[in-house]
Image (cartoon, rainbow, N blue to C red; front, top):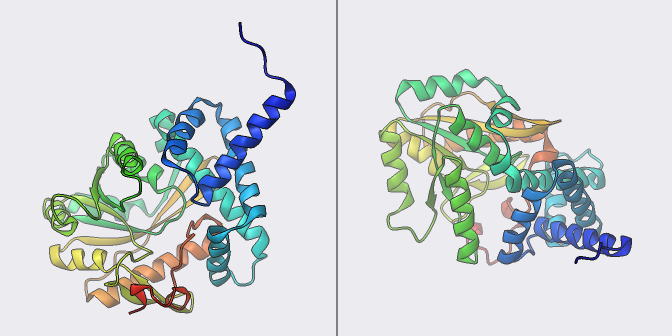
Length: 315
């Protein structure tokens, strides 16, 4: 026979879950906690899950820490006139919404995934896919890119993406399995049987579609761009792949709407050279991020002058 939890025990359990969400948002949650949280959040009623993650975001904002401080510093460049305390809190709530929705995406109906998306200039995307040239969607870390991927797959545009390896390996494998269950092909950035660039070239030459997160270079081989008035480094891959294969390169920005999502397909980037094309992608990202700064989830150093002195990306 089970004994009902006391009010104090329920409050203690709720507080523990809020702290776990705050740890998730600041990158301090273990692989086992991810797995447990994934199952727990899927089992909750959606309003309860949303309230839990919102409370965790507010706790993370109050506690601060390295990730929160970096988010605040990044937002100060993007929206220098904003109330940074309020904007940082809203950005953490947006990031919390992303994680809540990711944990619940497999129990979200296809009808809602498709019907809740407001697509701006969708014809740019569909025309490219129909052309047979191959299509590259370059995205920043904004809104819910996993939901956008599910929307693409459900509307007839399955695609390939590249994923940064996470530690431990079990956590990376969990995310790969999750994204593959939504219809994405996931290529590991490192440690795969073949170089990811070669695989991406093959997919484009077969008229496939790529979705590539492209606002943060993870190597020392990126392209310097002017971004919100300072120099940042972004990956050369999208422009290089477009030039190599003749594929269409479309900067794409994402944001949240009340009860739904928005994707904006910016104008196709003209094929010129890698630096010029990468700058055009950065300009489109800046336009989208400036319109919805709270939905840009960048908790890492991005601008060169913010990097540690020994970071190889400063070279």
